[in-house]
Image (tube, rainbow, N blue to C red; front, side):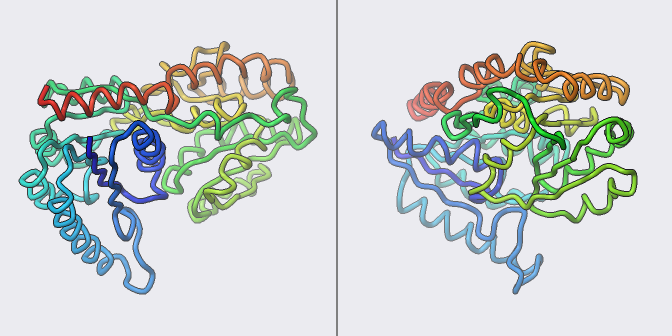
Length: 351
């Protein structure tokens, strides 16, 4: 096959985990691949141009990408999410005119942002790949042509360090969170549990994100919660995760969050970090409470679970093997590559 991918950008999580890890494997199996990222990245801007002018450049570059696709003539084009994070879809309509086959890949509830656009994009596509069954069920209300392929991690890249083989750490014990800066505010629901834990033990809240702006607004330090911000980078991502004693994924239950794909907890589990998450959406499917991780809803539940994990290292160690097996068997690139390949081949064949 000749497969073209229109992606959000090299450092955008949906591109980094749902497209780019699969490309070398597809090429190794004899398929030709062309990756055309947003320039600038979909949610970013070039400082010298500012946000508005950068948006104009993004559109110019996408029209140029369409011309490149017409020359390259792929068998199938995979559109990751959408071309622009707004309500417009005229460029996607033009893409449909030149693409022999078009596949839409979604890992978030885009319909919660722009319902009409979501329905148009599904209608333009020959097939939709959804990141979880909840997304697939919602998408089937628009089109029956849906395949579930979860967001994946490369388990080899996330090989656990020796630190987590024993799960015995010296104070302070690190409660860690990673994600985009826009979601840092979800940590606010843990303010009271973390404040209580800080009174009882030597702990540190460690946050990995691309910006500390929203974290500063939360002002955890003012509540006596020792906090450390670590700037995200591709090179230190895994090693920084491996400094966590417990990985956190608090999340409110909203129309937007319940369709997310659980990437944080998959990263924790692959890296040998015991995960605690809100039982929202696919989180309850990934985590089996007490077996490969823990679920907590209320502040009291979070306090109970975290207090136990911090005081009893063997509890943290007890889930590590099961957690990594869960990722390797269901949420890894190697596990899902045959499904992705079969899906693209079926679309190319008009099935």
